[in-house]
Image (cartoon, rainbow, N blue to C red; front, top):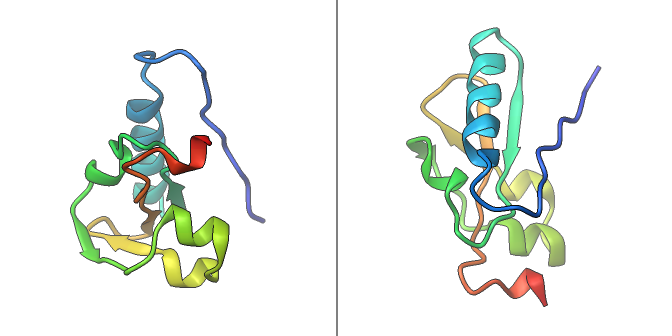
Length: 94
């Protein structure tokens, strides 16, 4: 059964990215399938792990027009996948 864990705060600098990256890695190490979604225009989570197979699409395409399956990049960590942020101009904020 799939579960969703959200790490959200309007305050900056409270460790959201670090906590998300750590929880994702621990769950993947436990053999769980993990999909991280980076919705931040600073793209920090997207640079946390080395990407093995990068897709041409990211969070903007996921929200606007592309199937989620086409937006998922794989990392070097087995079972850990990510939809990368490609919103470097904060388009999703407006």
